[in-house]
Length: 166
Ligand SMILES: [Zn+2]
Ligand SMILES: [Zn+2]
Image (cartoon, rainbow, N blue to C red; front, side, top):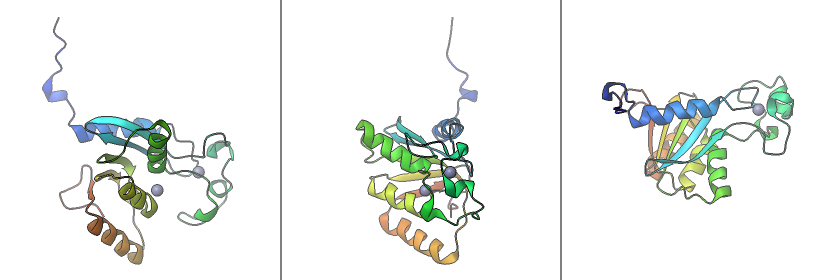
């Protein structure tokens, strides 16, 4: 019996990885916002991450993170937030298990924050693919764009028109 899939129903690589990032996102325990990320090296997924409190700490959605449980407005109070970002978790779980991230692609359901963008560059990630946009104040946006341009990292929105992506 033939098990050859119908090529018409086969997702392209970006769609494939991004749909897995969405499955990863469903495991997030952050009460504020759920994000999923994964790292691909030579077509293989070498690490995944979702956002939430560190291992061994009560889950964010069970009151583990006081900042997330507080009424701090979106984007404020991050100094006391103990939630680890999805992208950070993808980098750190790769480190924990000894998987090289050099030359990899980072897929995230949300545009990585400035910190995660810096860390991606330093982890040797060559390409960032994200889905949901995220707006920053103009000053930070300028520095962010400058960092992306100067580092030479490829940065694009999945499902977006060419050239768009922050
Ligand atoms: Zn949280
Ligand atoms: Zn981040």
